[in-house]
Amino acid sequence: MNPRSGRYGTRRLRRVLISTVLALGAVFGLSACSTYSTFSNQLRDDLLQDDLPKAVQATEKKGGDDPDVLNLLQRGLLYHYAERYEESNQAFQLADSKIEDQFTKSVSGQALAFLTNDATLPYSGYPHEQVLLHVYGALNYLFEGNHQDALVECRRAGLRLDQLALIREDKQGYTDDAFAEWLSGMIFAEDSDGNSTLVAARRGKSAYEEYEKLFGTPMPEAFILDYLDWARRFGFTDEANEILDAHPELEDELKPLGPNEGRIVLIYESGFVNHLEEDAAFFPILESDKDQNDAEMATVLTRRGRRRVWVKRKEVKVAYWLRVALPAMVSTPPVLTHARLRTDGKSRTTELAEDVSGIAQLTFDEGAGKRLLRTILRALAKWRVTKTATDKGELSGFLANITSVATERADTRSWSTLPDRIHVAQLRVPAGDHRVVVECLDSMGQVGRTATFETVRVEPGESTILRFRTYR
Image (cartoon, rainbow, N blue to C red):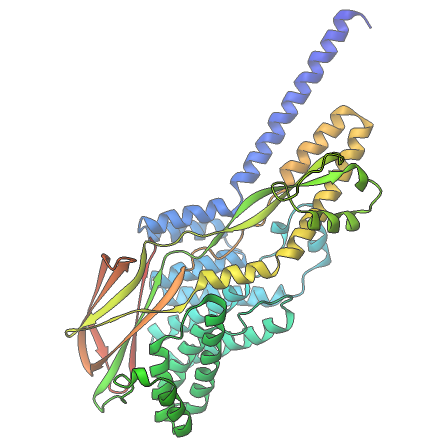
């Protein structure tokens, strides 16, 4: 080969490499842009700008004619806020049906996830998401005046928790959903089903006791008042006396409703639940690891820890830094943290009924160890392919490495439009029509937003539920 042809060949090789880098870089860029966190962030931005219609349209466009579970959950909640209750329940019911179908995952799906990433698997939702879809379904039916179907949704929430308890590995808590049980009790009470009401109240009490241990949140006084009211109304005298003895500080509030009294119940949702974003982590493969198989090495790397955690000793030689993409939970605490319910010269501040972000963090952490091990195993398999290709030639190894990086994406899917927290306030009022004001407050007690319900009808002995959501 003469010098000229040799230079031409080098230039051509460089052009091939550059073209390949650009092409695969474009693929990588598109992959990064198409991760769920990007879409999720846009949805939250739309809601922060009070553009609910735009957020609804985005979920409809992305989901198309065959939306997946996550799209249905997002869509169902946004329909709920838009007061499109029938469409909301259609979305939730279809999501629930798909979740049922996906409990047994296909072998082919598992294999594909191993070769690429977990985001290729059908999304079934975290435990709290599978429960809350029924909670919002029940609220949809309540706002439509359909108590019977609301009761069905409440029962499904309880059954789903029982079902999940059998399959959740390494569960750290959240064995019941306190807010779902509280809402169930309200609906059963309206239906005069005393036994079911008290069962829900007892389960709610146990769940709130668990919440206090997990998150340090006290049992809401409003729940205690409801529990006492139900125990009295349905003839559980001993239980009512136990509640009175346990809460003497609430003596003035523990009086039964008068014959012409009812309650206004405010469900206030604030902020956004913790969401998932991608985090890159690097694990050291040492020269001494070369004789281990992937399963052994994955266990060693998991125990060894990632860069910034693992400390290199002088006599140790790192052969390769293994890059993996992991989901990381990110918190964005809301500015508006609670609310005040006002009517007829009376007011009541909301209490925390459900720390959705706390529960989300807990259920996400449950699978952290196995998720990390699975991700490292997948990355090791890709590294083996790259190493083999590199041994065969510079270009093939280069391409294999780029492809490996481009296909390593974290699964950042979650029901990200859920609120950070759910709060409840109750006011005892005379039966009749009331003008109700909701003042949304920051941590200093300053009013950041106000909503007015001009005519709220309250029937004797019954509870009228109002709902309001803020995002910032």
